[in-house]
Length: 226
Image (tube, rainbow, N blue to C red; front, side, top):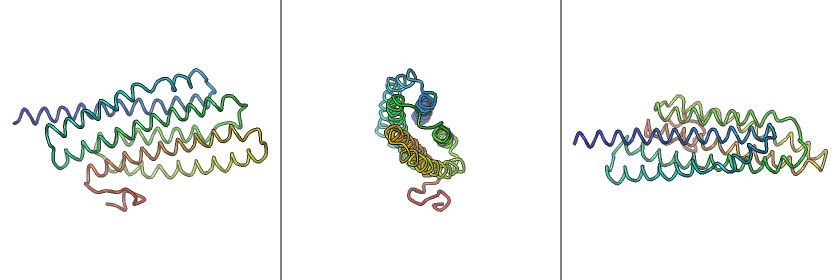
């Protein structure tokens, strides 16, 4: 029995490591897609568009590990919550990878036009989204509710920047119709970055549920649910 328990805990450790590896891939792809846009680097855009395979492979592997753990060990309580959280986090990270591709696709179109304006707030959104992802995964590893709550709080800054970007670009579009198409792509990028923040928030909420067994979704903040 002791050997079975030890094997199960080892498998949980491997599962966590693979999730962290996937999170690293996802964060790097977000960084590269925003950098490609801001630096007008067509080669980097193409690299992001062509580099989705590692995340997709990890997505399949992690799901398989989770389902085997559930089937073979029938875990209870905290261990069950950890595996369910891993399944959900895995899905969120795969979608972050997809959103990085969406940003690269918008960047590819944007590079066909003259710059609408110097890009300041979109790289800032990218930095916030990456930090939210990193902190959410660190909170998962450390089972740190306070760090998870800080991710939920950071989402407000991301939302505010998205609204600010929309208002500013709307002004550019009204002043010059030639800027409508590229400005719309920048608005799309800001929306994709907001969605990445939403996925980081989902992970943070899963961490809070994992540690406290309390569901804080739809409550506006973690503290209101604890």
